[in-house]
Length: 223
Picture 1 (cartoon, one colour):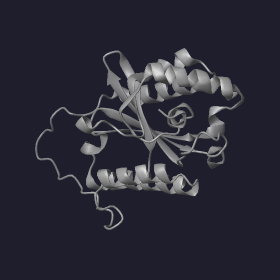
Picture 2 (cartoon, helix red, strand yellow):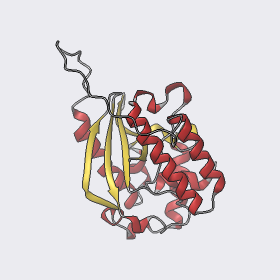
Picture 3 (cartoon, helix red, strand yellow):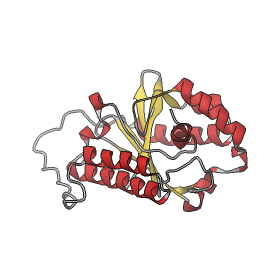
């Protein structure tokens, strides 16, 4: 496993890939899948700029998996839901997810920017989904890479609002039990650390309630 790929998580710069048996984007609408494919395509462009052809090709292959025909067709129109004539089933997302997403995102920031591995790991699900790793990454691997990262870089000299535009945070409930916290980033931090080869103007942090409580399950670019 390449260290650079893990560092995408450590410095909060990811894209999301979920196992083939339960693809994250299966529950998205055509328009949403198009937007996700567009985000992957922009990541591929970024790798091209860095002369990393192999990774650019990997991300572009995902583009066609997410939305076959991307680049040859226009973005689908988001269909409006028809008016309901009867009481809907109780499928609304857990209302606690909004507050939980804000709380655990800020806890994640405290852990990373204070170089506190235990605090950081307490926010993360047992399996964290990262780019090009369909089975996800377990906590033991994340812990190992955090130790290396904190030994190489003085993260405590950086504040969260140096990296993120904190006033742009918003949470969005999804239909599959996830809540997504979106936040914009400051572009000047895109190339500060050589190992970080991916950056997005807007990131989405995906939280879900597990038996042990709310945890961060994945992170990805948001169009």
